[in-house]
Length: 311
Image (tube, rainbow, N blue to C red; front, side, top):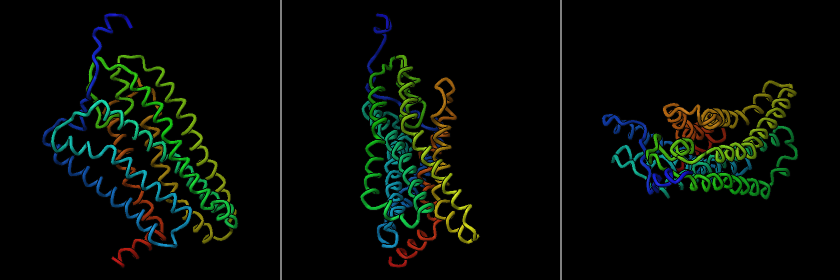
């Protein structure tokens, strides 16, 4: 950096988040839509947590992991949506520098945790379908707790590394984030510092964490499908596949939206496309997860009816 560039550089104390639309007439409708999505997300995931805790029949490894997935979804969407609702209703688009970095950290952290939990759940389904006689020996309580604890600890490691790297960037051209939250790619576009190192860091972090998680899911389902195809009765095949269909649907939605969002070079980044994909990834997916598990899982539906009946 030459002296002239250093002279023109200013310290950023806050960012301005533009949100989804500048049209004043859309602010209230958008507020109502996202408030409804947020409430459905909270309610749906809290119902999953409540019924899987209340019903002794659901005190199994599968539902232990599902509770943690629902908890992660609540934290993930709560990192974004409340600030977005404030922008819609009050027009206050400012966020402090520290607040922006904190939001970035938790977004990446909970996103990584969800990827790891989905991999753990895939391994759980593999054990249930491919080795049912030893399932509760393989997935005992100690193993389940260790897998969840490892997911939460490991998930925040790349988030911490990348966030610390972002704090070392200089923002001298503008503090206007053309997005509805402090996401990584819009922040990199604002920086007047060379971001090649951080982009390489993101690539390495993805390769070390997301790729192994995806491979665990892929290999688990290769074995699961192979085991299901060896079942002779149609009813047996249906029951075996029904235990995996909800998880497979959630995995598909999560990875498709995540890949479209982050696995592309910064030069190919489009603000409008980024916003649309971010809405799907950060608000719609956490809302869909409990709905998918509730609609496609007979045990969850029965537990929900039981809890409602008691209420």
